[in-house]
Image 1: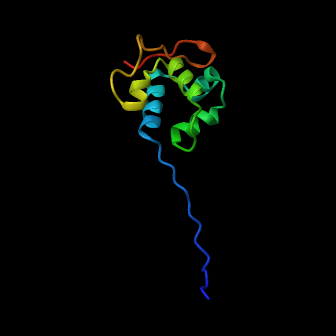
Image 2: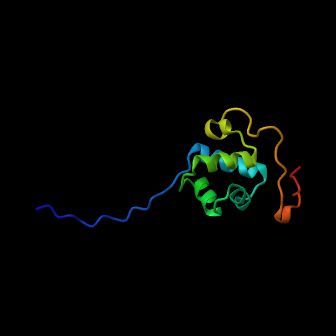
Image 3: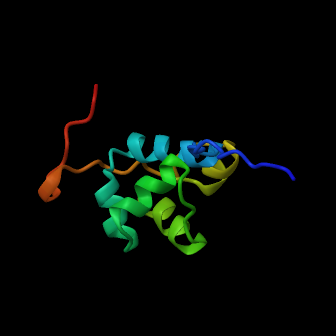
Amino acid sequence: MVQHDTLPEVKQEFTPTAYQRRFKEGRIAAGASLKAVADEVGVSLQTIGQFELGKQSMKIDNFLKACEALHLRTDWVLHGTGPMFTGARPVPTKRGGRPADRAK
């Protein structure tokens, strides 16, 4: 009879995919907070944060809404090709909707 030893607990590590890393890079470059994107898309802050960490996927319609809200080109997010933003780069905002100072 084979005796089964107790297996050690395996901690699952999550690694974001290339497109999840690019999404986060684009969000930061756009000057948008997780909360701002979540509010615009209509999902929780945790949904966006977990997506960026590679711990959760996002429904395609929510992903497209988030990219549109950030003016991110989906070709750039998904494949890393072409420019990051569509048209003009969005103006980042602080809490309360006041314009933020852009880094010079």
